[in-house]
Length: 432
Image (cartoon, rainbow, N blue to C red; front, side, top):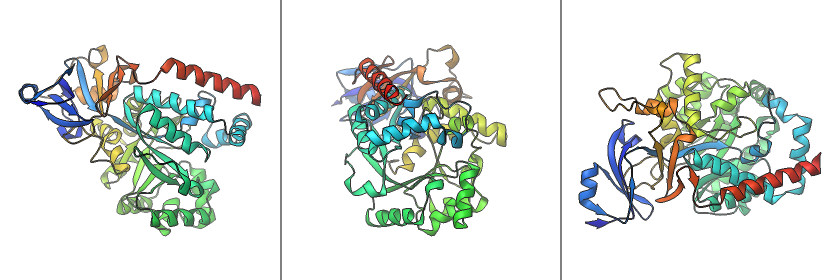
C-alpha cells in the first residue's frame, strides 16, 4: 500500500471533475496535492495514512475563488448605506478618511484590514483571493497578509510601481488600469508596455460598472471602454474585467474573441444599483465568467457561497427562469475563477494532480436536507441556494487544515480582530 499524508474518506463530492453531480468518493492527499480520487473501498485498498478525516457528514467542494474584493472596504463596512457608487466616491465623510490613509500610510491598519477580510473569505471556503487596493503602497502589504494567512491570491499594482512589486510564488500579479473617470491614454500606454515585456503580467480593470462611467469614456475617447482597451491591444486571455455591466453587443463579441474574463459581483452591483450584468449572453458567447464579493463598503460581506445564490436569483428575475443554472454559478465560483487567473490546471477542481484545496460543508443542517443523489440530485442546488459560510466546517489548503469546526487553525483570529478594531478606532480618533 502506498503511504499518503491525509485521506478524506467517504464524502459526497461535487466538482467539475464529477460534472457537478454528487458522487461518493474518498480523496488521497500527499505533499499538498491530490494523489487520487476514487470510490472509498478502492482508496482504502490502495493507500494508508496516519490522518483520516471522516467525511460521512460532509459535502466536499473545491476551494472557492473569490475573484474580486477590496480588503480596505472592510474598514468602512456599513458606512456606505443608501448611496450609489458615485455618491460613495464623492462622500465628504468617507473621502476624509481615504485621503488621510493615503497620506499617512498606516501599515497596521491596512494589514489588519487584509487579515480580517481574508479570514472572513477563508471561512466561507475561499482559498484564492483577488484583492484590489485603493492606494499604491498597499499592494505590498496585501502580499504580506496573503502570505501570513497562507493563501494564494491575485494582487494588483499600479503601472508605476510594477518593477518594484513584492514577489511571492503564491501570488498572481496584475497591472492596474485606472477607473474610467481617471483614465488617460498615457495609462494605457504604460500598461501596454508592461504586458508586452512581461508575459506573466495580467491586466485588471473595473469596466463599465455604471452608466456614468461608460459615458465618460465614450465622450472622452469616442469609444466604449472595451473598444478602447482593444485599440491598445489590452484585451486577451490575461485580462480580467470586473463588473462589465454596461456593454454593447459589439463589446461582448470583442471580449469573447479576445478570450478575456469577466468577474461578476452581483450583491454589490445590486446594492449600489449599478445595473445587471448580462450573464446569459456571456454564457452563450463562451466568455469566461468568475465570481467575487467586492468589498464590505459596497456589499458588506465576503461570503462567496452566498454570492452564488444572489447571482442566480438576479439573473433569473431579469432574464428568465432558465437564464442560469446552479452549475453555472458553481463553476463561476470555482473552475472558471481559476481559469481567469490562468490557474485552471492547478486549482478550482478536485481531481488528481490538483492542489488539495477542499471545502467540507456540513450536510447535517436542516436546509440541506434531504440529500438526494439520484435519479434527480438536489445536492448542488442546495449548496447554491441554501448554504452560506456558516455551513463551512473545514477548509483544507494544500493538504493542511486551515479551518476546523468553523474555527481558524493557523492564526489567532481573536487577536487579529482585536488589533483591527484598535487600528480602526485610532484612525477615526485622528480624523474626526
